[in-house]
Image (cartoon, rainbow, N blue to C red; front, top):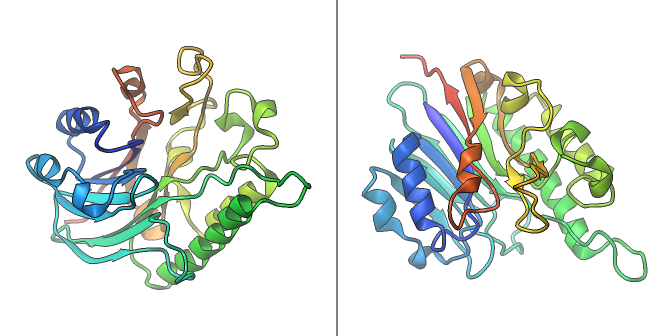
Length: 268
């Protein structure tokens, strides 16, 4: 089973890129982020024509997540538990019925968190929201782990885990994506017993999933690795491959992210 994550940076603006990539690579399950549209505006028909079931948790102009699956989906749940007042569309979860071993998939778009500080030097509410959202994700992962089932938490985490995951660490030292508090929360999530699928398959530095549109970042390979698929122990036991479809970034009108994917060997 091939499971991918792709921040499309507006699904309507990148629909041709998305459907081309889907047709070429044929993933079984895809978590999409930054749809930037409400549920009713999602281009469902174009995706369904490629053989996918679609679950959407959208929001006007900002955020928005979706799961595409060639298998039936059950127990589809939007929103990350822990804060009923949070109206941002950043999480969706579904149980993927493979016919043998069901796989639970959570698709997430973690807050960016910038700016970190207000003008008077206090922590900005955007950064405290990011940290609080990560605390909720950690608590939810703890609950999922008690189920002792294979699950994948896939998406744009807006976290650079290590210095080797960015082109120039000094340029990011005060950024919400690389600040120590953010990285500590990510490490706490991993330390629950989850596996960073990319690092389980690759040890080489300077492999990225995002290149900014500004300052020739793509041409200079000035990127960062912020899109991750974290696996429960049961899913990690099935992991056979993980990679990044880097070439997508060089296409016409691309997203600033590229897809990252894993392959799981599902027991028959």
